[in-house]
Image (cartoon, rainbow, N blue to C red; front, side):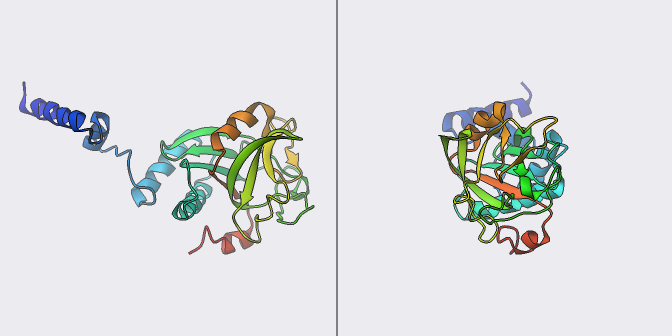
Length: 233
């Protein structure tokens, strides 16, 4: 047996016996595919951006980078429970698939689908945003998901806005994720401010992102982009 093969067999045997990383992780390390790159490093960011955009070419790279920046800030504050990030790109019209659920641990896009915006935020394009009760507008920023419940719109998910002045009234405004008939191909996707998804995907998406995962809702709002504590500093 060639010496290089003997060495490889020896190392694999050691890792299997000791449990240190395991043989497959060792192969990843050996051939340069480190799946355990620490979050926040440049290597991690490059890995996430490359892998995610290869699966969802309709996800704007700059929006993804902002979402990852916000996610890392929230992670530092202990708000990340599952290494999941949901990005909603309200710079896209409601006729396009603008919601992305990403498993950051595996750098895998789990869902890419349609999502509504508030009826007073615009028709097809989302042009204005608000944190005010009764505005029927969409709020921007970072949200933390809570527990699902059965409500007037069926299976729904509580959301808590984490950004004062931008979305911190979301819970009191009853801004939740739920299913809606008006979301999907050929629909305008306009709600009372909630990020509603199609009725067929509501339960699987909610069950995936429930219980302390992060949502980053992006829009072309210079005021938010300039003042968000998750994007600055």
